[in-house]
Image (tube, rainbow, N blue to C red):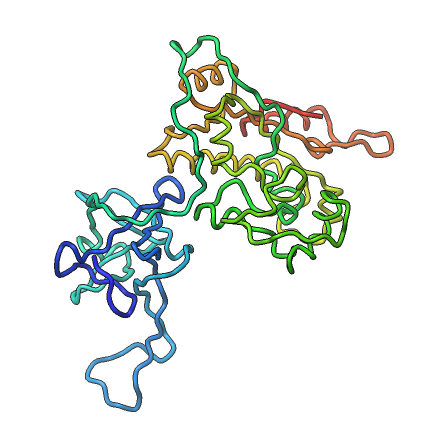
Amino acid sequence: MAKTADGGYRASAGQAGDGERFRMQATALGRYLLYGRDRDFLASGRQDVTPELPQPLPVPVPPVGTTREHIQSEASPSESADWTVNVAGDGFELSLGDRVLATNDAGELLLADRGGAGERARFTFVPAEGCADYPEAETNVTGEPGRGATPFGEVSGMLDAHMHMMAFEFLGGRVHCGRPWHPYGAPSALVDCPDHEPGGAGAIGENTLSYGNPVGMHDTRGWPTLKDWPHHASLTHEQTYYKWVERSWRGGLRIFVNLLVDNEVLCTAYPYKKNSCNEMDGVRLQAKRLRELEGYIDAQSGGPGKGFFRIVKSPFEARRVINEGKLAVVMGIEVSKLFDCGVQDGRPECSAEQIDQRLDEVHDLGVRDRTS
């Protein structure tokens, strides 16, 4: 396919060298951004269809104010550029929701209903050179971690028994700035909180907790300069971006315990939030996010199970993963009111049966560690 002068795309180029080269940048397993040479994205746009009235028209046209979806170049990644790719016959189908990328009689690219597109929604991928590099943090490490002779053999290395890699969702989801990964990469993951503007003056929680000065300032630009964070003294900025964790793994980290963390009292006190303040809701959400991260790293590594980041549920699984040369991740919980069970006026809020049921629930989530 080739880019047109108006920022759209046609299905074919006049010459082989005129075709657009896309980097297929994975956003999840089976989903990709198509990143062009001009550092733009193949995306679906909405275009007004407004006939020129009162000029007589030879064929019926859509009524004024309706829209049609077309394919265009966009400067930033978004849901309209996040394509699901599936095998279809002897080619591939690219879809957004329930619609697929297809061609029309004029050779234009557009979104069409899946049922009626047929062969016009079948595409093939050809290896190409000269693709733009997608922006990402580097590990600056060479070599591969060692492997064991057997899956069950003795292992050695470093262990981190207390991490909160999913803390970007805790305390209502607005206290923490940035996140350990984002489908659209480091430029979208390593950003400051909007309420920290201007220039960090709005970061009352960060400035008070981290620096002891409620009117302090910090550089809020985030990626790619990261001038003032990550920083060991910052309690609200992202410290565990997945590429930084990868660097630690390549440097000898072999197992870490990721504690799903929340605190209802602090969540209620903080004015900005998007998530429930219920601590067990936070546990469920963060367990889901941890598995999404595992899948994302797999997607960057070539497919299911190929990433370095593996959630384990037993000592044997941990040994097997480490002997494969990967990082074993144990899921745990650190909350103040486990299972929504407390004591009010000297009376337990939960029965033994309810505790057993909720213990079974978190065990099914993959939790194997509890920190008081």
